[in-house]
Image 1 (tube, rainbow, N blue to C red):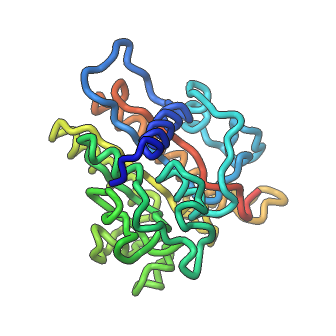
Image 2 (image 1 turned 180 degrees about the vertical axis):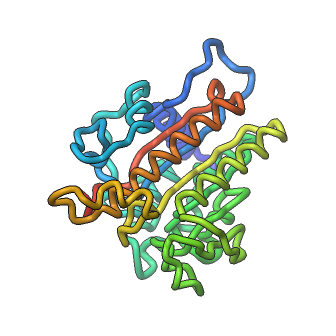
Length: 287
């Protein structure tokens, strides 16, 4: 790990910024003696207007609306236009081009081996670190999440679930993902799988009395625009709406955010946890 003053300054700034984007759960009334847990939720291709609280007239996102209402918000906050560059910047606190990441395909999404990641910093500080969902910064050594500071990594390959070698038949439901580098079949809708396993990870860390950094990076609502019928059916009859599946995917994310917040409350974690919610770039097809 590099230890130059500039690098440490970047990491400090990144941690400070992350704690300010959306502190959505209750804050402790008095300083805690232990470092706070950090839960970072990043959705894929969900635009600024793809939330009810930000003006969408069709979507219903009650849990995210409530989180928005009681959170610290960045009103002048910029991301890269595509997936991997934003993720590289978030993981390193550096401009994405400086990390070797400036596109999403053909080797341009591979994070440089010498980069220090957010997970590296948390793990060096005694945290247990986990990622659940979309990594998109490299599927082979030394670019995999388990090579870049994550103790547990449950991810799909490439930039979408169907880009997971050798499981190109993945279709968001009952798919095979890589768990710490080994393929494993899962039952259920992809977003539910990410949140279920993230909460299991947090529960295990809590039982070990270890602070945790939990990165939940959903591939939804990235295309193809498919969600379970119970979600997409809510928007199927809306006049002029071309992609009910896109809206259904966001409704599912909203429900999972509600489950996550309730989990933190039930486990008495909300007073010691910073919850961050953001998206990687603008909408691709839904609005």
